[in-house]
Length: 118
Length: 114
Image 1 (cartoon, rainbow over the protein chains, first blue to last red):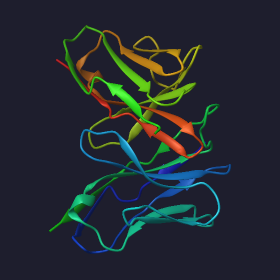
Image 2 (spheres, rainbow over the protein chains, first blue to last red):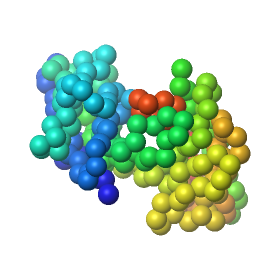
Image 3 (cartoon, each protein chain N blue to C red):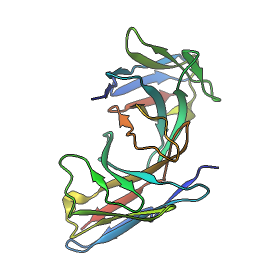
């Protein structure tokens, strides 16, 4: 069975400071890893994903995450946060890439609330 | 592309009534959709996997008769909360995986049972 652990439930940080949101996973098979962001009363938006290839993946809004197989981690980082980054962030794992024949499940971590202060 | 539409966004119902939530894939076909439940300040818990043309697969601990799932077409899955009670109040989110890059989520439905 797969599981995801987000080590920090809340991360307060000042604007323009760097931030790291931690994520560890466990799985007995190959995994695909995702970070999602959720704003209040909204669905989830894909932030970035690791499927294969380069272990460092980046999003268009400055976030990056690095897949570390030996440490079973997929931590999310941003060198300088903005007020608008305040949201709930979820790390997720799947053993399936999806598509028309997808029968896989997406397993979520507990979530981390990023609070960016002015 | 790859948009999942969920309706309604908010619903308030009386205890004992049933509520139907719709999840539509707008620009792709989804043989499989997923229903999640989220309590305040908590993570998403997978409730069931909705399979087009067949029975849904429920996760352990989820009452099949309470949460009825119908996936009658390749673009529509519905979740019906039957005989709703206040403890069913929650945020329900559906998702689908249109292609091999991950999952797309609906905007969620806030259910309040009074």
